[in-house]
Length: 440
Image 1 (cartoon, rainbow, N blue to C red):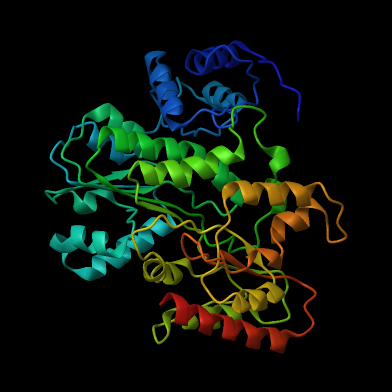
Image 2 (spheres, rainbow, N blue to C red):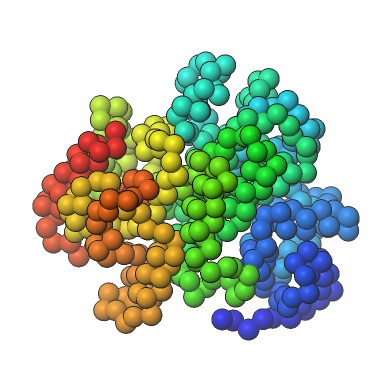
């Protein structure tokens, strides 16, 4: 782990002192952030309020829980006037104490938000939205909170990087019957490890909601973006448990138990952790556009398939239109479903077919243990980078009677070096056929 760097100026010392007022008398370096120190989103919101009291709120400068102290200080130094915390429209609406809202929709701006907004707009019947959401188990992150501003029973929150649960706790919303919360990240450069660590604070938020609104029904979805459309891959240098924060995170067993067992016992019946299917091209001998088209045709059957131009970035606007329908087909039932993330090689697709869907899920603890074992083992395939890319062997795809839900492969990764392109393509199409027969 890198050695802790001390503050180099008075601004950094001041920010560290504010961190310590919230997190306690712990050692903090200039490269630390709230996320690195184990603070949750409520801690970060407290920090923003302290900055306001210090007068650092006059110009629009935006930073997040993972922004290092040194960068916060640099932004302050480069600004002509004190730093500003940029609030999104959501909290401003909530701070008006919309006490009669029955449904609270929380999300972040971005590509996925636009996709859901486009999809729900097509329904044309906004009065039926509560029933539509309740029956579909669909979460609706909205790019434009004002869209439902006139709806008497729905309150929309669009608050990027700061948890909706914290703002609810501060505002006194009442009469809430349903909460739909998107608390993932649409940044394609985040790894699965980031998602798991993030679930520490997400779970705290879930339990906090349940305590504040015991009769409210919760829908919680965490997801990552499709992939980096420019490079066709996730940069592996940004992932790895060895880069995990140096203190503050609980053991992995905590994640599994709190997420699944405690969540269920406290009545959080709809906990979905989705990782949208990814098609990542590693210079596969099969043309990427063919795979892409076949994949979405398999999922969507006769519907229009998004277009892919191998020479250009993915057309997100077309693709996103179909994401909600895809999630809708996967998110069924009232149980706690946990879709663990895996990258599959072609041979794993074949083994997955043999498992006869559905198969057992992996707990976070099993996931982290497997990752750690592989990272500590020498490999001819590129060491930890290759491990981060492929995650698990085919051994996890085995049937068990006492399964909690459907395990769905999060990613289909086409690695370089595959020799039998046409055979692989045939197997992949068979995989889609089985997937459709089991899920849809």
